[in-house]
Length: 550
Image (cartoon, rainbow, N blue to C red):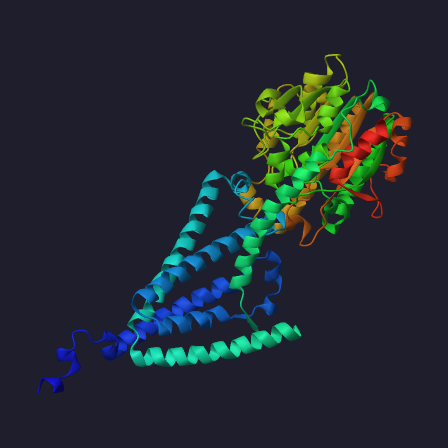
């Protein structure tokens, strides 16, 4: 009689799925639906900010039905392994895609796991400077919490596959298997005919792309070793045509081609450049202007500095790190070997700067050494006018040998609020005269709530820096060669997507024979480079400059 007793009474080892309660089945189905929706959203999430402007090309991810098929055919430890693997992979993809969006917005490129760990610190500096430290901490914590909640919800909801009845599993496996086969067939036809049939399998290509990105970054360092070994510039001496002159190289933060050519900024910047041209001509100075292509965009200014000064294309942090340990002579070192004393004026440097040893400065004036006692302008430690006044006091008022100085002006750095204004040069003193300006205007959190306001503030910051440079050159430009250039284009909120990486460059001097040596460059007379003015890569500048002034 025992063999006729119900399974529920005698089958201790019989699978529980055979007698799953309908309510349990319905709840498991709800959990599974949630898990598949989350996976679909993660797989379909664009990793390029430009994609959000047109979501018509979003396709159905085949991995979704593949996951449903596998989960429907597995149980026990195999299902547990699939659950953990799917959760881990989804967590990694979501984190990478969010990082892609961040670097895409800031630097117009995807996140590189091999190279971009350092920019986490710089990203924090930019975010905290734009919205405030407490707000930045809140944003980061909220983002991490949201990511953890999504991943925890995904892991929990994938557990719904454990409690499905055998019959439900069978139907799910058959249904998902059929959809998977049809989808794969459409994918194959779509790929061969290059038509959009609405399906995609993005996971494998995305992971392969990351692996290839890391592999290529490693190979790039090998190529860079070869570039370091080749140098068309001898050790010197050089620059005989500039004998007895000071040379002042000024990097203007976020001063890009868009500031001159894009509609929101062009009229204001053109007017300012014309005013600067009149001002310096009245003081006996002339200018030549052109374009250089920067290796970076939106930030990482030191890559642009390293590229121009070393004559090497320093497009990532690994190249930069290798450059500063090499024997390659920077432009600064070439000037020092040719009889100039060299100086760096870096108001944004607030910590130790061991990299400065590579460039060959006799003296480094970081933020703490410039004597500024006024209040900071948000992230910006001091206004550009004070930086230039401090340079005159510390380096050019001593009557010593000619100086070659590299100066970084940062008033045009995000968040572009508050904006300084010029004061009487004789009244600058220790900088406390700027305190009222530093406390004026709306805070960054208000400005950045309105993209149009951000663009207006950016234009105002560039206008201020150019005005300051015009006034400075007219006042202190005797027997001096000025090289003024942008370090990179600003972020895409300013330029829009797909902007070039070109930056303006202006070379100003009082001796026409000095500027005549630039004739071969075919750059534009005056302060406004024309659209058709030749564009050179930033790493070409060092050699062209040496050849022109030897």
